[in-house]
Image (tube, rainbow, N blue to C red; front, side):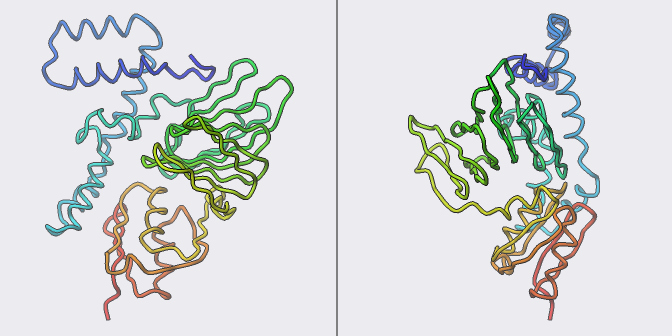
Length: 317
């Protein structure tokens, strides 16, 4: 196991397979005895199983008020949107464990993770500091003079400094590997690809046999296919570290999606106002307050349906 003590990927996969079999309703006494024997084989088995159980319990805690909001909504595209969000939160029942790679179960294999709405700063090692944004997970590889981070989910800010006898930091983004010796950069991973913004030093991106260098002030976007995009890095993108969001000519629906990453529940934006543009500095941890601050400037109305659903629609005249 790695230094932080996370169970190996193979053990995590075994735990998930056992969970699926036992939850299927067809597992008999013999299978349950085999499962108990598997648990007793290795402390790592018990560790992985306990993590799985904790996360499973969290996933089943879908707030009743959110479920009621979904069922009470009109039979329309709006209701379907709410139901999709509800299913995403209660993903254990809806999707099983087939969505492990792209769902919050990355936390099972993580050494460090954050819940929705949580941010966490950690001194991982001498000269290596990371800050995790909401709903993020990383695996650490700290062996001898080697340092590595796997970004399994979400977003992080990294500051790495050279140390005698220590190799350059390696970061697995899921879409390529980053290498840096002395740098400050942020990295976000999604299902579609990744982006890295460099603010101090430089970072190398290695993918598909090619190396791309990003210097301070540059941002790279990349995925499994297509060219590497190069843009200017925007330091205001790091406002999340201080619990703020800086919007510069953003679409309203883009702004709502950004806020939604920091809260449990849904923010639904009516298509009639989705394309409205906005700029400003807003609190990141209070989506309702941030959206209501736009009401004097934009023709919108923000309505809360329980604490889990915010609806942004046209203002009635």
